[in-house]
Length: 225
Image 1 (cartoon, rainbow, N blue to C red):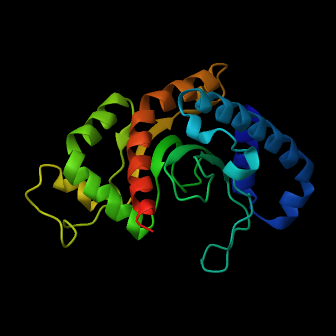
Image 2 (spheres, rainbow, N blue to C red; image 1 turned 180 degrees about the horizontal axis):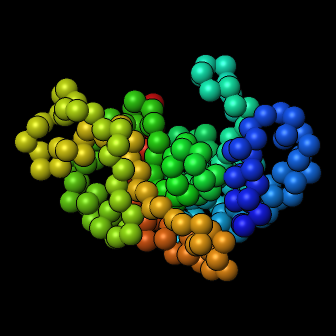
């Protein structure tokens, strides 16, 4: 993993096509390292979460090329690498397990992270999650407590309880969330350590009940179609 970090740091300082093309072979090499790790992650997660069985590296990883059509930042490449492992892959609309390595100073997320949950759920899914919190808020909180080295990200919360939901519900503050994500920052020393795979899988296993809880709400949402 050290080679991945070094490459991303260099890319962040030289984010242009000329540099990337001249280092294309190095990118392919570190991509293979990352993909091999993701393959092991899928295999390891499937031991305690069988819903991800059958997913592939391709269904869970992202291209390094940025879509610059609708942004002021025209940097052509992402100075990070990530994989989202979920029952339907990275674009399936389900909760899952995200692994992210970022160049120092890139400030996309601002850190290397492990995350478990769902980002920007469809409106019908968001509604289902909020209804589950109202009905089963204690269970929701228990799943967060089990993942005791993660924190619930509330950085994108609404300022107020959304319309139509009771403000006096004991878990009403969590209805303001637009994403439902547990986040754990990881240092470079952990990324390059020999025990990285075990460390990541152990962390995800503790957060798996949160993932199961969310995907139950996702299933309820899609049952309405």
